[in-house]
Structures are given as C-alpha cells and as structure tokens.
Length: 264
Image (cartoon, rainbow, N blue to C red):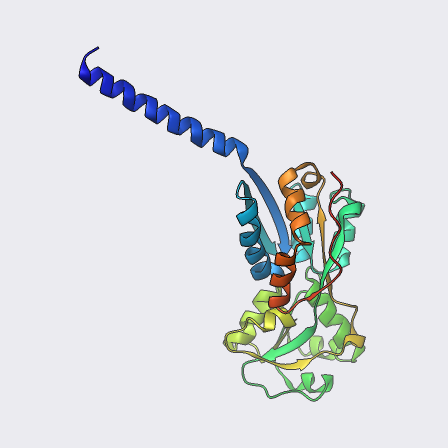
C-alpha cells in the first residue's frame, strides 16, 4: 500500500473512532426537562451545577415561569419530567389530571411575602399600601405570588379599592414584579422574600403578616414521563441532599422536611 493511502486510511479510522465515541457518549446521556416556578430560578440552576458534578451524563433543561402557565403547558402536552410549583393549587391540578404522580409530590421550601420599593420608606402596616399609585403584583389568575397578594390585600380590606382606582399593575410572574420595583417603574411590588434579596436597587420595606394569607410553600413532583426516567428520579432524589438543601438555605428559603427517595 502506498504511503499516502496509508495516511488517508489512518485519518479515516481516527475520525470514525472519534465519531463512535461521541455517539456513544450522546447515547449514554439523558435529557431531563424541569418546569419550575420563576422564584426558584437561581437556586435550581445552582443545584443543577452541583448535581452535574455527580451526574455529568444527565442534561438538565430548565423552563421557568409562573406556576399556572407552566401547569397549563404540561396539561397541553409540553414535555416535562419534573414540576416545581410555588403553591399546592397547580400541583394538585396536574395530579388530578394524571400528569404528575401523586406519590412523588413533596413540599420543599417555605417563604414569606414582602413589599419592595426603590424609594419608599418602611411601611408601618398594610394600610400604608393605599397611598401608592402603582403597585406591582403577579396576576392572581396564573401566579401563586399574585394569589397570596390578593388574599392578603382582601384580608386587609384593600383589594377592591385599589383595583377600582387602577393602582394594581399585573405581571406575568414574581420576577417581573420585582423588576418593575427595582427600576422604579412602580412605587412598590409584592414579591417573595427570596426574590427581594436578589434585587439590585429595591429594598424590603414591609413583610406581610403571615395571618393574612395561606402558608407560602413550594412543592415538587415527577410527571408520568419523569417517573419512568432514571435521570429525573436522580435529580428528584438529589433535592434531598445536603448540597441541595444548603443552596436553598443560601438563597433565603426555609427548607422543609427532606423528600424521601423515589421508589425504584
């Protein structure tokens, strides 16, 4: 065989070997799709980094948004292996529709509802809310933070008058409400305490009394598709790890009882 033919043959062999190894690696990897409430964005991304150190063969694809919008997406057939909701309502909705495995649902974090502002001074009580002209809150129709806010404002006897005066600025999720206040586009915004801690400019000026709304608890569950996927189960189990719990605590969450491992 001529030398130049040997070189070509050798190069082809190396190329084919590299392609084979790459294909094998891709075949061994698994994509896990996670739909999660917007307030968990930073914490889950960080937890994902820790998870991939022990499970590098699992590719995590996150889809963040309001719990209601995400639940409706899953309802309509959008691919998802794990669902993280900012309240029980939307998780129960998917369980009832047989989209999420009931036995896998676990409460994971607790939170608080606060008021943030770029310019306002600390508020003395809920009645101070009435003096502001632009108040950002997540839409109660699709966001848990909006539901908690509406519940608190109604309990304080303020919601109807604020709505009638067109003072309420509805947002698609808690992060958008925070952004409005952070930029000074609204006077104040109702957000979760964990989101408020991420603001660049706005400060917490009031913590809404817990007695005015239902407990703020986030939960997670495996979808029917995720329950059959080893990578999804591995991430679910990882949420009970010391690393995951430490990350949640570092972002200001009250970490609830560790979720028990999924049955294999």
